[in-house]
Image 1 (cartoon, rainbow, N blue to C red):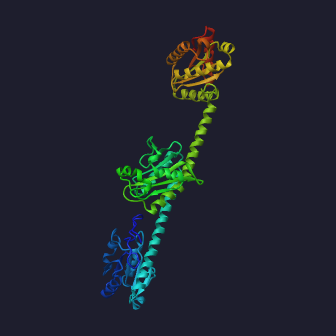
Image 2: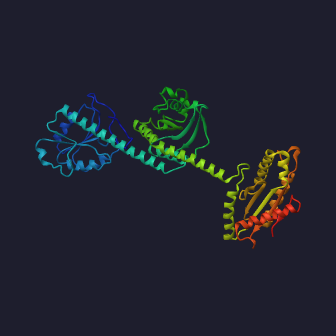
Image 3: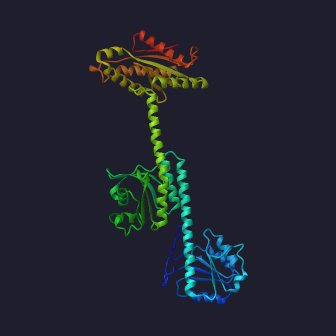
Length: 489
């Protein structure tokens, strides 16, 4: 039997007597000196530590002693009910053996407390006595192990279930490593992504930080991760001081006071998902078998939550991509007419509701048909793309810039009145006139005409009225000789 504090319970001393029976702390609850001496003679030389209480008065204190608490109670019929009741109130009940002669069997009822874990009659026969103690201790140890496994299983299920409620991969990864660190004595716990071709490791999340630092490590400096990656199986270095795997990095681990390391692949459908591995290290002691099992079970149970989060992120990215495609002009990358109509309705309603100004510019490339006819549509498309870039650079991020159709463009300027919008329009006209388009041979100059309208205006009752007024102003700018601004009044 071994000493284990993994579940907070002292199972035994971890030593074995010459007879091969595991040693343990035993407590005799008996006021008969003769029986006590008899038990003492039988236990002499077996390696068991033996304590005697004449009454239940000090029983609870003894049972709650984290170091010297008994692994088994031997009780007389007189004290059995109190011993059994006290033992059952513990988080992990201590077994109780009833020690009595044949006369004592008729003096006790098991109706309220239940039967003992075993019953030994006096006179004591050493071999049988030791065998029955060993059997009860082994049964109790197995029960404790099953109880610990059940508790760990519940923790794993709870952690994995909580991860399923999250859709961001970063949050899921951090949740797993943080919960693991909260349930185990780890020095550091992280989830990493391994690129075998580039021989590098990216830290994705640690138990200390939700967003891990942008840190890239050399795979060669972490042989335990390298082996786990190559074999696609968990790697456990119980003691870095003796394991040959860590021989070349032992001094580095010693500087960090790392004692034990484990690396567990995160698998989904029998494959390592996204080259992800969970790594944990300890500075206090080697990881126990139960802790290794806990990490492996957690990795397996959490894989679906991690996989779901990454798939969701990918789908969201594709969704945003299609939304951008649906809202933008394929040639220029500016917003298209469909999206502009939607935003115009929103901004016009907001301007009315909050009594805010809203300006609109219609911009047209002068003599664009001549460019297409003279240099070809490919050259004309290049001019449109370059002009779209100038438009975006010229206006605020809050302004909505789009392609209205052909060589006409529209700019919606929320919370911008006539004076402010006119300044922007004049700057655009000057900038285009001074710009030399790369698509045009010999740097043929290009100019623009701008029609401008602004709400509030008594003639504007609907969103389409604002655009129509700006379009009329654009026609005025064209009629007046192009390369200028016309304002609708």
